[in-house]
Image (cartoon, rainbow over all chains, first blue to last red; front, side, top):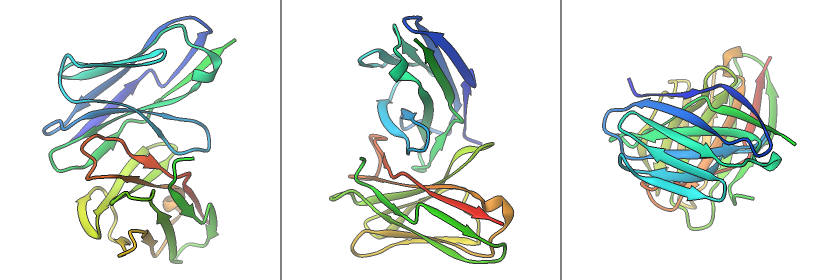
Length: 109
Length: 114
């Protein structure tokens, strides 16, 4: 069964303290791995798409990387406004999207 | 604002009842997706429609059904409601069939079943 597992469940960082979030996946034919950000009471907001191992994408303080079995979301020098839940999702050959349960990030000023 | 509109925002009903959730996609988007988000299971993919046709199906219960109308809005019908159906239901839309993974989510409809 296709599955996405994210770790850690929660992460508290001091402002400026860089770290990484992990997304491990098993999928029947990966047709894309996606990162989203979700703020409380809001719908997820798209960040990145990665298609193949070795691919990297960057946006401001965020950088996403992909291997054959996992993806990392690196956060460099985070700010309090980066606090949110970060969701990872995969799309399989059946066009089904599977989301992980997310990592709740809190950045303390 | 993602441009995706969901109604109602909140809904409280009793077990055994039936409800309909409505979604208007972003202008120009042909795909609509429905997701269920509960505290313990995260976002669960229910179903996708593309230009009126069912495109992909996830773990949608038989008590649930959806459709996309010619004007591209979509409705999710939940019947014979159970306590466990209480959740946040999200609608999302995309321009095409979702190849890029760039889905635009609404703010959700929170369903409480008492």
